[in-house]
Structures are given as C-alpha cells and as structure tokens.
Image 1 (tube, rainbow, N blue to C red):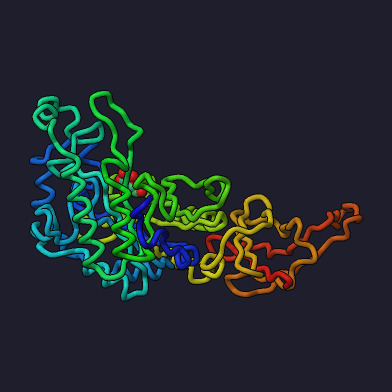
Image 2 (image 1 turned 30 degrees about the vertical axis):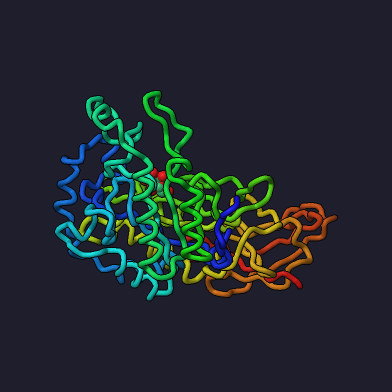
Length: 430
Ligand code: GLC
C-alpha cells in the first residue's frame, strides 16, 4: 500500500495484560427490550420505530455507577456502542439529528460515560456499527428492516453507499477527535459473503475500509482496531463461542478477544431467560485466558439507564471471585503444561495457576510437574497445599497410591473452598 497509515498497528501490550473488559450495548432498542436487532427481526418501519426515539429518557442514568460496577467486577476497559445497527447515536453528532440530544433526554450520553470510566481507571473503546438501518443512503439489503417491502425497495433503489460511507467516515472522525485518547475502535460488521439475489452483503469496498483504517490510525496512534472491517486488524473477535484453543493466523498465535453476552441478547432483553450462571461466566473468563485471549463481557442497560439486577448479580459475583483471584488472570496467558481433566492452567512467569472446575476427592495429579514446583498454595486464602511425588515404581496397594514418572501430586482438603472456582498457585522453580 503506497499511502498506508503512519502507524500501521495498534498497541496491544496493555490489552493482553488486562484481559477483562465490559461491553455495553445501549440505545433506543432498550425500550422495546427484545434484542438490539428488533428493528430488523420484526421488520419495523422508521415511522413505527420512532416511538422509541420519542420516549427515550433514561432518568436514572449515572455512568459513574456503571464504571464502579465494572471496576469492582475486575474489568480494566470498556467498549460502548456509539451507534448500533439501528443508526441511533449516543453522542451529539453534527452529522445527524438521530441522536440522544434530540430525544426527550436531550443530553449527550457518551462524554459523561467516557469520563466516568476513565475516572475509575478503565480504558475506553467505542463499538461503531458499519451497518445503518436509519440512514437514507444505506442501500436496502437482506438484513435491512425494509427487505420485504418491494415497493420501498424499488422507490429506494438509487441509494448511494458512497454517500453513506462519507457519513460513516465523518462520524468516525468525530468519535476519534472529540473524546480524548481512545484505546479501542470496534467496528461491526462486514458481510460481503451474503447474497440474496436482489441484493448483496456489504464489506470493505462499501465501507472504504482501507481509507477508514488509515484515518483511525492517524488520528489515534496506538489505538487497537478490531477485525471486522474485512481487512484484518489488531484483534480477532470470536463471538458467542469459546474457541477450542488460542486463535492463530497462518499458524502463528494472534491477539484475540471473545465477546459474550450474559443472556441471549446484547441489548436489554426483558423476557430472555438464558442467563449464564456467575460460575459459568467465571469459567469462561478463565478458559479464555488459559488460551491467551481476552473476555469482553456484555451488559445491556435498560431504558431508564440502569443495569438490571440480573446483570448486577453476575458482575458482583465475578468481582467477588476476581478480588481473590485476579492474580491468575491479569498478566497471565497460556501455559505449556497440560492441565488434568476439568482444570485450566494460566501462567505468569514462574507462577502457574491451576483452576479446578470440578473439585476432586483429595488429590490432583499434575503430569510433567514433578521436581518443578517450589511451593503451592490455595490462592483464595494463601493456605499451603502439600505436594508429593510418589515413587514411580510403587505399586498401588490398599491405602497407598501407585506412582507415575514425572507426576506431582497435590493434596487437597475434602471441602471445596467457598469460592466459585478454586485456584492453586504453584511457584515454579527458577
Ligand atoms: C453482532 C451483532 C450485534 C452485536 C455484535 C457484538 O455482529 O450484529 O448485534 O453487536 O455482534 O459482537
């Protein structure tokens, strides 16, 4: 590329240490409260979606409370939807009237939020939708709410994606220049592989991704950009699944971040009930870090501006675990040692962390660790865990176990410590 960005890559050094972030999906879809895609899923026309705009007034909104909850949960950064696919903007963009300042609320939501999170020491990211179901130049396609209205499609067939791209770039410039230092820009998403016959999906040519990325990197040197512009990026973003192992490109490990919901929706969904348990969420965080990834965990606040009790219960539960165990998360990554069944290892230098997803009776056997461990303790209370190496030649007898070459055996208390996932901290010999 001849006139590529002056700053070709983002700085992920903090990101791979911090490991845990908060995703926030918030917009006027919180009013219907049945998924952030409601406009598309229910094929709602602009004039019928307008009632949510006209009644948006989050009177309990206090981003300082959100920031404290995130910090207490152990999160180190946050990414918020500046605009989602419905086109509604949380800040006072000069390029549209479809924004928070024109609703009954009447105020910008994004500046107070970035300030509140920065004040708690969290890094700041914006999720910005590439898709826009409100913009008059965004061509109707198979995802668009008006996809089945043939008269509308015909009347709107001259929509010009280049004009929309101008708007997209202009708004990105606003976000990148009006909110101080940004740490992450999270664009969503490209779907040029889709083809409905009468319309095709959209991707890098439509967004003018190269030009957009160059601008982003020039305006915010070091900013991390995700991979959904269809031209690569600094981080890969698996969504709604836990990868089997760390992500690679051409066989080389890459920086990645799993994004996950608390229940089955990103935006506030009143009646959705598949909420993950706190323990499952903690296991997901551990599993992610054990594979060298980050977890971006989503909350969809409601239309009064609050995180609801189901979300708070989970964030606080994670915070309680993180208060005692963050040492096995921050600064940690994959280990070369293979964990026993139902366990995950994370490692930070000579500290190896054994996470026990199931609590076994009395012993856990660590292959390959005989002679390697100087000291072992439960992380939650720093109580000693005795270790031994059974003579490999010893035959199993009535009350003595058989030996195995290279295996270190830990002696556990019968009672599982009163934490969601117990962790044993192993100090490796230098
Ligand atoms: C998807 C969805 C979306 C959500 C996002 C989060 O691409 O379109 O609603 O914002 O994933 O990763």
